[in-house]
Amino acid sequence: MEKRFRFAGSILSADLLNLEREVASAVEQGIDLIHFDVMDYHFVPNMTFGPGFLKAMRQKFPDVIFDVHLMVSPLTEQIVTDYAKAGASWISIHPESTPHVERFLTLIKESGAKAGLVLNPSTTPNMLRYLWDKIDFVLIMTVNPGFGGQKLIPATLKKIADVKRLATEANVKPVIEVDGGISPETVAVAASYGASVFVVGNAFFGQKDRALALLNLHKALE
Ligand code: DX5
Ligand code: ZN
Image (cartoon, rainbow, N blue to C red):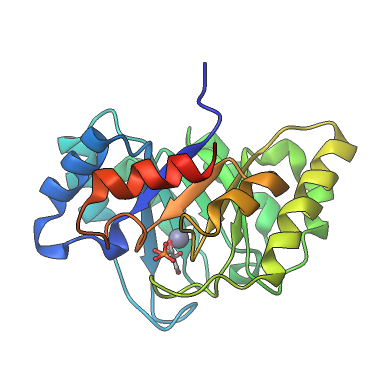
């Protein structure tokens, strides 16, 4: 059975010169997914990992769930296809990055990956109502995307409940994932509103004792 709560370690906050070791030890310590932030200097003011890098990771870690968060603009078919072929397990896209959200969600699903829609702090969840059959998960940004280590924006928490309500109304059960500023202080309230997958950058990779950090995150959910 699927775990009730899962943690996605964001390698943005890992030791970038030792990512192979970082992913191996994170998985060993009990991290459930590896969150892979893709940034292009257009959609967000930062730049990160390409598909070649994901492919190399996938070869080393055939069983890891790679949760690829595309922060790129404009989104193109090539970008989605490249990351899918490189081994993404989950792929999420921002509606601001393309006028053709439905088409891209379909493309992701056809590629065999799980498809997710990402909601920025100021993005309304309304369009979910027309997209549920194309959506496996909703990624709710609890900070403005671009950087790790930011403080959670409290107003975004209510959106978790809004998404949950929209899903219940539509009789669907998407995974709800939250991204940004998740810590032992914020994780429980996010869970109480309906989130079950938590991205942790600073709260896991940024900590000296990561096993303890993960334990404290789990404890906060008890
Ligand atoms: C922000 C990224 C996040 C980031 C989260 O743009 O989408 O995945 O790594 O980092 P923390 O957990 O440190 O807020
Ligand atoms: Zn992310």
